[in-house]
Image (cartoon, rainbow, N blue to C red; front, side):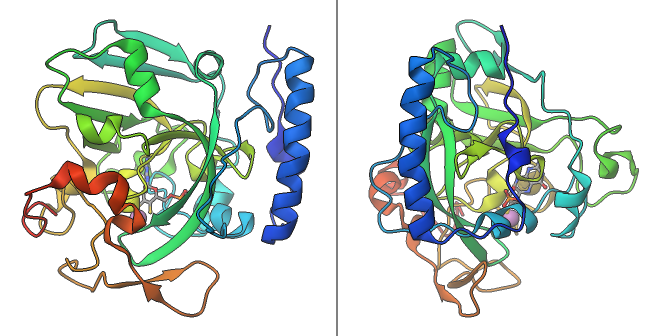
Amino acid sequence: MLIRHNYTKTIPSNEITPESVYKERRELMKLAASAVALAATPLFGALNYEREKTSRGLKPTSFDQITTYNNFYEYSTDKESPARLAKNLKTRPWTMSIGGEVQKKVTLDIDQLLKLIPAQERIYRFRCVEGWSMVVPWVGIPLASVLKHVGLTSKSKFVEFQTLFDPKQFPAQRESFGSISFPYREGLRIDEAMNPLTLLAVGLYGKELLPQNGAPIRLVVPWKYGFKSIKSIVSITLRETPSHTTWNDMAPKEYGFFANVNPTVDHPRWSQARERPLGSFFKQDTLMFNGYEKEVAHMYKGVNLRKFF
Ligand SMILES: Nc1nc2c(c(=O)[nH]1)N[C@H]1C(S)=C(S)[C@@H](COP(=O)(O)O)O[C@H]1N2
Ligand SMILES: [Mo]
């Protein structure tokens, strides 16, 4: 039986959530979550996820900022339009196929997937290659759990992701001379995909993702520039050879395949040393690997990060 809760509709979009209020609410959610468990409704809604224990003192950007300042080229190249244009994206039913070099190819209904793998909260920094940043309390499932579920082989060396191609729903996909080519594609090396930080996000601030943020399921790779975090995913393909990626295929000198956040490697047209957090007037220093050096630097040991940027 499928019971769908539309919690997103009950949240005013102009809501700003100071940390204290947010913490309080999370306590409430914890209570509600156990109530949900007791009522035996293991469905993903606003409440059914394991809360993060350590947020490393990060203060989440407001819900309003995160949901009204977006990059989603399938709608528009400006930041304000996606929130308005994405309202009617049909996010259920939604299936995601996983194929290529795997032990068993599957097509998963995402509600089913969420029953299989419990969602967790992860409060991550997020840094766009354009020089703005935010802190997002994501709700999601580790990509590694999903890949383990389908089973990897010795040929599973890269992962490729694709966004839905549906010109009826995505206005920019109807234009023959657009800004980028569609479907949007992104890729990771298998060790990056299996890193415990790599998440398939289905929510933020304890609520289902809004379409402008990549509903119903999008990638989050917190140590890489935001364009790697592909939205509204319909397929994941394991490959023996490097994945196609929209930005790297289009402008390889400007957007590397790795796209690791690195304050010492500038974009050809601007510095990457600093960033402006959304909602803040002042800039701050950008951190190596976006602050996740401890968790990810080992994957790039001995790699020339200027060359493989
Ligand atoms: N399908 C798709 N995914 C995408 C994009 C896009 O245009 N289309 N933009 C990327 C870029 S450049 C960024 S910074 C983030 C923005 O995510 P947000 O709008 O949730 O902040 O999504 C990434 N994923
Ligand atoms: Mo971005």
